[in-house]
Length: 393
Image 1 (spheres, rainbow, N blue to C red):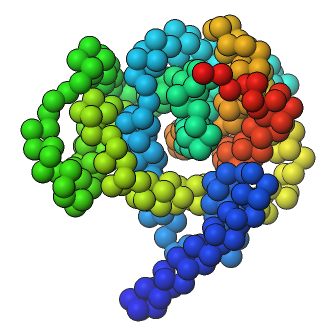
Image 2 (image 1 turned 90 degrees about the horizontal axis):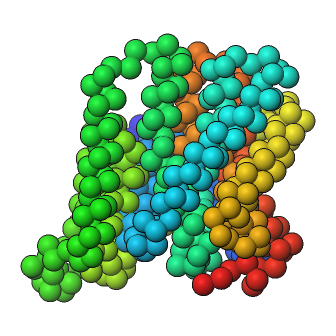
């Protein structure tokens, strides 16, 4: 039994590896990111495709490790001073996005007879963009150091921070007893994260590695020290009920302040590529092809509505904060999809009976589709707006 399972796992890895290489090569020919290949492979090998995945839950957990590593890398590479300087855009932009999204869902909900709880949930769902997708694309396009990249990054990180109060609100509207201790724990965790970021901002450099020279000569120690700071930050954040990815981001900021970025990047970059790939494969595995075919028209209309609505809202927000129209339109395209944290909102709402089984399946499919189509939407926006004119220092 063990050998059969083991050989099946080896076969699956071979199929995934070959599939990614072939589809990635073809996508590169049309200048599309490899993450689309991951999603397509997930669709094919998932339970609604050829059903080659034995334990999808384990695969999801591995994928979550990829997101934690991705945020750790972003923390090491992001310009903290630019991020702090964009706090107004991050805070008010995120609030504006959420309020306008809830307002739009309220108008749609009136037509379809939704209750207030469902309107609120759907507003939250479409308001959050995909940090995993956009940070990957910003990195691939070398935009993290550019003005528009920093603005988009600020909004994404603010949205990730907002997930904690969003889940509390959904729990309250869904009738779940939310204890004072649980809320207090999240507040304390948020204060600690803010204090850590502020400390790094003020100190500029942290000299916490007296044995740095010895570590730089030992590749194995580099790997494990980097993984420690990454997952220690994630674990501490999780204890306070905050996104583990956000804790890993702070861990990356600490490593950046310790001037240990280059060798850590080289040491664990391969881990990040592998685990992030697993995350996007697990996203593709959740797409039910039969459900898509049966609900092609409503899903198609919802897909167009989400992209147009989110693109318009984020374009207006970015334009209001001193971005040119070209930059704002491009940034709006970057933020037009629905993010992976919205899966968590859907699961919470479904468990509280706010969403029916059909509404849950529909929303999960919609999120997965927007993530998969997002690179094409961004590519189309680049072509129509003129990429060279969009990207400013």
